[in-house]
Length: 498
Ligand code: ZN
Image (cartoon, rainbow, N blue to C red; front, side, top):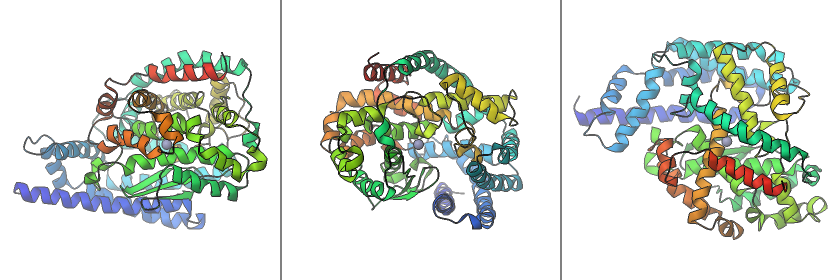
């Protein structure tokens, strides 16, 4: 095929893949938000068929040859070469899987969600254990087709965060343990911050009324985004101008929906700000899971828990809840948002103890894939580790091993990116605060200008640069976890007068 025809064929393939992916994304968003559980089995089967069709299109041998040539073609432009390199990495691993096994695995993953949801509702790990076991066995089989000789968990980590490995995360978490465990012990013994007013009764309709104001402050605009409710908040996107975020309202916790919204809108803003010339292409996504999480957690923690952020919003929140917050000062409110108390549920965890929740999950996943742990009785192991690292007693499986959705869709190797993302964020913020007056902009309601810095230095690139390149370009140096640990040490030493 002539060069021009080859490129046209490749472009057409990209479009077709993105059409299927869009259909599957919309079905997934629908499933996680509005779709009635009664239709789950029917939908899951059809979604698996669609996944199978997409698999056939993606693994077309002719396209693989085109991509293989393009990835090192000196005549191709940089965008095309980088795209081809990314597709090549994905397809090299995907095309070796027999299609029937791929479809069966997609179905298993969809069913896994239903099994997890049921087990979580009944707070009974034994209902989910056989599914989890199968998900692990089948994941091992799927990875077994690859040519890589690296341990499977290493490959999983690298899939979610290119360039990482067990060795990388062991080093990272050793540092986290070394510096944060003694700090947490000091915080636990210090005079506690009053958070009681956050946990009064907060009627959901009033929370929703405030949510509109919060979304306006975040410049989350209905022309490109939409918010829905779900069991486990997430964000998904179709393209630059179509991002869907979700939240969950708790009637006895005013902070939960607000902070999770700031977080999810952080993900959405990243996707929205990627250069539109990449729309529909592999370059149009955030570059990695940790980079994505760095942006959402930056918004949630490094901005959303500051006094500057609440300067204009807090009076509006008080107006909505005069009985609950009318006599609480902004300083007391912001201190409460930052309080650190070892707890059970990761998504509700404070900034300081958060990475330990991830560390526990990481240690368990490592054990499940190196054979030192099995799924049987894993809820007991879970509870023991929570006692060991966080000093808390887990009262039930719902708040214990079943709390998170991600194992139900076989996202093994994903969790560590949550902690790594928080650490990336610290380094970005360190540089950003040198460039712009973040607090002044937040206090004046110019949240979009803070996002503007992130757009320029992180978001716009999508997958065009590697995570390491983004970090170095934005901050002038490679990733250094000390920014994160210094930040936490400084913040909590001050908050608890240590
Ligand atoms: Zn997130």
